[in-house]
Amino acid sequence: MSFQPRGKYLQDFQVGQEIVSAGRTITETDLVNFAALTWDTNPMHTDAEYGKTTLFGERIAHGMLGLSYAIGLVWQIGVLEGTVIAFRGLEMKFKGPLKIGDTMHVVAQVVETKPIRNAGGIVVIELRVLNQRDEVSYQGTMTVLVKGRGEVITSAK
Image (spheres, rainbow, N blue to C red):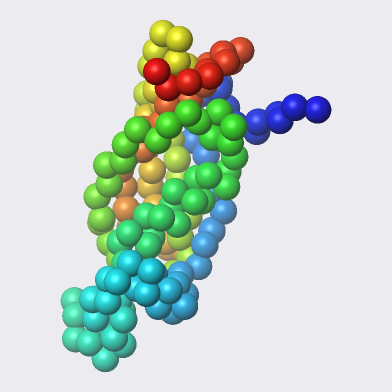
């Protein structure tokens, strides 16, 4: 039996289609591990006492930590599994912090589809990262190249 992707093909994406991810709670361990992995030890993320002196009044998650989780949450939905050819780009604005204890989720909405000859097509997806109060933390777009239904792509020439 061959692999049967759960992902959507270009023809399956409809402009305006919206999908909501599961939630993911930000923990202190997440901040510590991300700081160790990236060497981003900014005290805004790693020092509880320093965090109290900031505009936010406490430590906040690294922007790229939340963004990494957002991409992972979109992947978990399954719409790109087995059909994505390439990740083409990401444009994101950070609108508010994610804090320890916040539970984030992603609302993904298809904003554009564009067929490409012999290569499936481009799908532009707006991502809104929200906390448990539905406050927007991040907002932007992710662009991916996906297979068209029935297409077999064997190389990236």
